[in-house]
Image 1 (cartoon, rainbow, N blue to C red):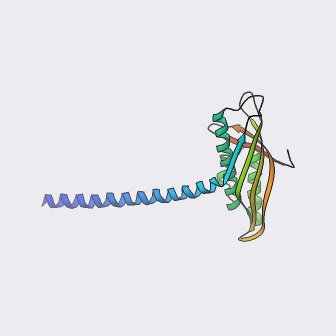
Image 2: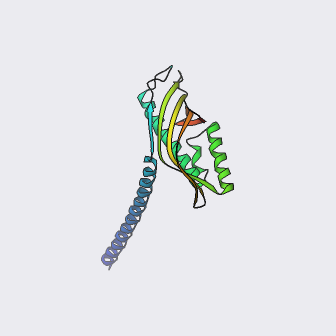
Image 3: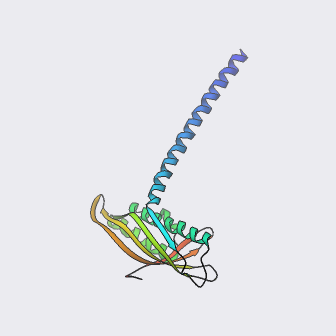
Length: 187
């Protein structure tokens, strides 16, 4: 009798483990799909950096890669915030004046019911100043993207634009953050 009970217990335990494994697999699969969707959205943000003319200090290769990664993340985050009118994601890639501007834009959109969708983004960055201490970099961004302005689900405007931004990024504990982003007529 004990042997039958032990085998029954093992079968039930094995069944529970299999069920748990299935749930974990499904959960990881769904998260992987979400990540794939997020990365496909992120891959729509193309960022290229030209840093040869930066001064007075040269920009190290590792720093260049970090700036491209974090600038792409900032635009992905800002696009998400403006499309879904949410403030949640803006704390990480933005600081100072840039964070305030994105925050105020989202609040304004929430009040009016308007939202913006940015797609097919291409950012050509030129590093023009890199502080001797490595604590600030000024970038010129020639950005081209499709901008849709929506009122609910109704399209108000859909256009392809080229914008010029002067950007100040500074390092934080583990990434570079956008501290200022100013639209200019041209460089």
